[in-house]
Length: 61
Image (cartoon, rainbow, N blue to C red):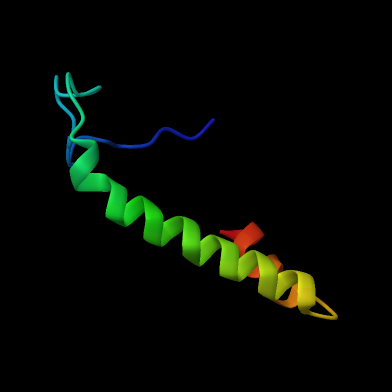
């Protein structure tokens, strides 16, 4: 089993996660844009003859 050295890792959420309150008005525009982009991508995949061309790189990440 390989051990990972996390001594130099950045701790983004030290004692701050989960947040006590979420400002939905601030994140709704970003979420809406993400949903629209995923919908366009999904539609593009449905119309492609060989959608694996675009799906394979995503699965490997």
